[in-house]
Length: 237
Figure 1 (spheres, rainbow, N blue to C red):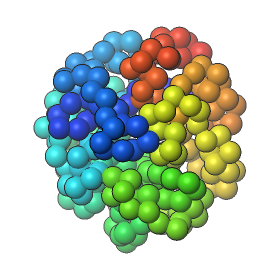
Figure 2: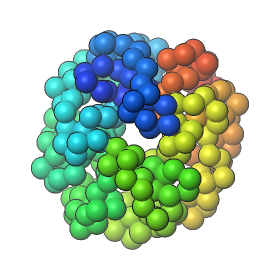
Figure 3: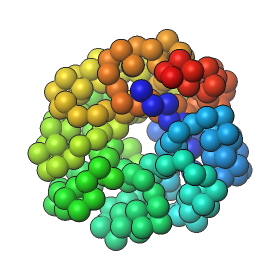
């Protein structure tokens, strides 16, 4: 299981939201590049970068910062937030981003997802974000009636081969992941699943590892010190 530190960027700063609420943000650094270098220096093998402004507005607003992070570290990045065109996907991959996360377009533009998976294969990840069991899009502000498993299975038919699952109600809360839904996803689609949201202890990481997730994204717990990255990495080594 891969331990993946999260860097969420809003207005050029490294922040964490509480349950996806843009009005409930905590700023942890005014320099996301320095934060990326820090996590790399502590042994991270991949970083999870989200452009929160992009997710909200539908077009990247922090591309310059993401480019600076990509230039400053040598470990691979997976990037999401407002990526809703083939041009945007291609631009990120061309600059060296390892994986691009598609969320809203998985609901709104399935043909784009199909073409992206055909052209870019394993460089595409489908981000599945749910609130009360239903997928939410457009910066987690638009509700749908689609469940995580339903979306994952439909995306798999289009060629998607990797998924990130986030329970919005647990994100930034330091509670615990939604283990049941994560298990259901893994059991249903038989493709790699990366877990996110509520991961706040080494015990959670051990349980996720036992469930068979490919990776665990850790955000707030790293910034508050509830999880020590060095200890977490040694746990899965």
